[in-house]
Image (tube, rainbow, N blue to C red):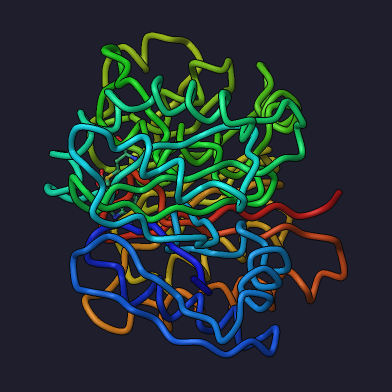
Length: 352
Ligand code: SAM
């Protein structure tokens, strides 16, 4: 099999297809996508196996916005015997992969959910069978083996470089909703911190005593994440904030328009979850960074119904153009997180 398997949010297959096609084209690799609406995955077929290898190695996973997880296809194991799927899987893997770890997965669909119990039941036996067949390795650089069940008797098999893919099964971090957080949105910011910053960067950029502004803060799920880490937060929203946040002593509430508010002193972070035209939010964030009001920002772009991929690319182009003009180094990354719905999350930072 020549190609890549890409997991995405159901309903975003055409955006996922568009971005892998664009990424491949940049590298001079041609191919075509097989995608079905709401299937939560895309298969990108390349002309040769070498092209699939090159694409999977040269395209940074972090550059992909709508792709939650990906692996390079090795085989499609079909007609697995329901009383002995392991033998069929082992046969399909033999001679093609020695892996450091194994992900047994499905697609993020209702059909996929029905297959999750099967995956759980096969995890240990498959691990032992692979070890017995000397297909598992301690080498930290060995790839991760992906076995993605599409039906009870069929699974795509592939490999991913662990340093160029999501560390999470199906690209979905399992985050527990903190009972004291005022809204479920809190998980979006937590996932964003996990996605865009490594552990060292989180320690360095989210230190107690730092200052943040949360635009469109009510009822306070995002502020809660910042306050929990000991940051001082200015929450800007006409809506009411959760009383516990106000009592924390770390949060001040300004009932103001987030598009007009500017901090008296520069802050470390500006986060923004205002529901508005994406271009307006991108412009706002670009202004905060380029005019020195903050060093780091995370903001959500609520996507329109149509032309979602070009809209996101246009917004990112606006931000990067403004940051480029400062002459300083910057980082810009965008991802449709698991906890995002019809939206994507952007991280931008100016300076070293
Ligand atoms: N991040 C919040 C949380 O975790 O609880 C949820 C934010 S909610 C999706 C969007 C918020 O943006 C609403 O509370 C709304 O009042 C606020 N909002 C909308 N337009 C605004 C504006 N121009 N300035 C400030 N806040 C605004």
